[in-house]
Image 1 (cartoon, rainbow, N blue to C red):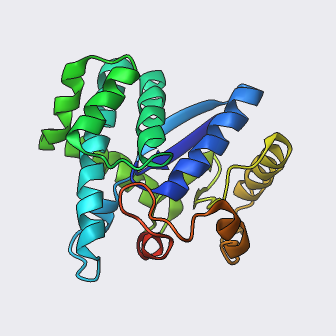
Image 2: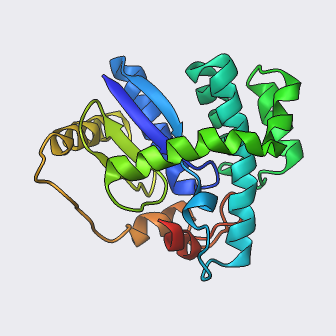
Amino acid sequence: MKIIFWLDPSCPFTWRTSRWVRDVAARHGHDVHWQFLSLAMLNEGKQDIPERLRQAHQRALGALRILAATDQQFGQQAVGRLYTELGARVHEGPLRLTPDVLADAVSAAGLPAGLAASAGDPELDKLVRESHDAAQARVGTETGSPVTAIADGHAFFGPVLASVPGAADGDRMFEALRLLAAVPQFSELKRARLPLALDHAGLRSRTEGDGHSWTSIRLTS
């Protein structure tokens, strides 16, 4: 089964969802197709985005350019490895998507060092934007990161996870999303984002990844 997953590498919620997607796919032999969604592009022309977030999203656009170049030159498995290396540094550590961090992630993913220079190549924005626009069209409304689609079903923003579920819960959630995606009348399901779970994980009191706090990330999701 094919899972299409659109991501912005600066988003900590996207990182957790991606680990769930990767785990489910590995257990059941599903094929994950990593695609790109840019919060910088999503927020173009908007005046109410804090400068701190705007800068973080621009750094993420550089990482997306590298991911797009990686896909173009080395394929999807390399994209998955590189995103994992980026996420481990930014969302499981205190680092930001700086040029040094990008270069280190490229090296750790087993890719040529010169690929890191793609972060400064605006020509790659065309590939990023094509993927970004495809996510928006598949969901049917403007939406942030992540976006998930299973097979030929509808794409949805999310799912948003407070933490990565274990195998049994992860499989149940995947099956639920697969079934919902096959129902054309289904539109949206939403609840509070588990503040108790976040408090327990220590996430409400710390700044995550590329300068995103729990409150500020909701401005773009």
